[in-house]
Length: 372
Image 1 (cartoon, rainbow, N blue to C red):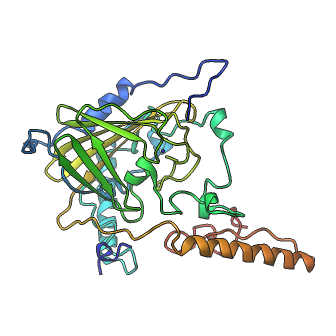
Image 2 (cartoon, rainbow, N blue to C red; image 1 turned 90 degrees about the vertical axis):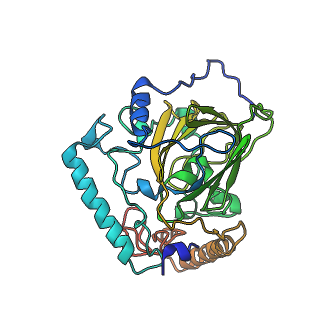
Image 3 (cartoon, helix red, strand yellow; image 1 turned 180 degrees about the vertical axis):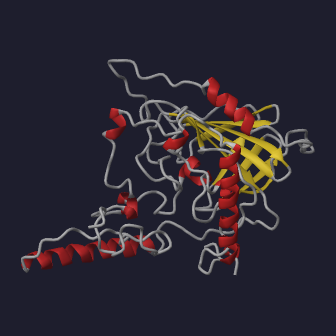
């Protein structure tokens, strides 16, 4: 059975010294972005009945599987693969497709939706080294045990100790588009004056107004911010502000150290072929990152690809079970201490990944994070 059939928002703070100034995308990044967003030969941009570029359809970031988010050191500042490297990438992608088609697991057919290879050495195209900029000193003060959620060591005492992804609330804008093990579907629907973008996993939907209306008051904060769009030629440009400081943009599912409420995200979506979009997101948060950065990835629309319900809601079984298990671990640690046994706390996820498979280097579910 195919996996497709079983898919399971601050007031500005005053500083004695001026805050860092966010910068627009670099010229080098713009050049790479333009190359990646170039239309395919012979492609003509379809238009909606009211004359706007038509981006509608069901799209998947499965197309970007195999492209590392962070650029491997061996590529240095090179954003694109050589011909020989590209040939190797094509072989790896073909192996990935065959593996997805022949897999025997709950993730059957994942990876098989990737039908085209790409020359990117990393999804990050800015900074020049293709790696996420360092956290600021201010951001590092925000680090908390909750950042890894169920993949942390614990203890977890309340739902707030889990990530928003763990709680089935949101993966955030960036986390919702990045390719992960499954659930990478995106649907775009348009109407005059608006574009609606829905994500398969955690079923978030954003209504992006393109009718020229202003942003909401800065006093209003939302998980996914406040988005306003406009058209630049055939490209939809979305500027989003008014975030909370409760979401993250670090990991594939939006986990990791939380950004500040001053975050600004600029997305650019361009249709490059009948079955392909180019999605780009530029992140500016000088309270969290020492530099801005840009991610660019392809989205494809393979024949038969569907966006399916993702039945995950806050308060489902995982949270109460995890919390009750943590209390059992509290009791077990106390009982061991009475026997003179001093041990480390067991990790919440028991060193298993999202598919309940042992994480490499941690073969024993009770091993610590160093595999000891």
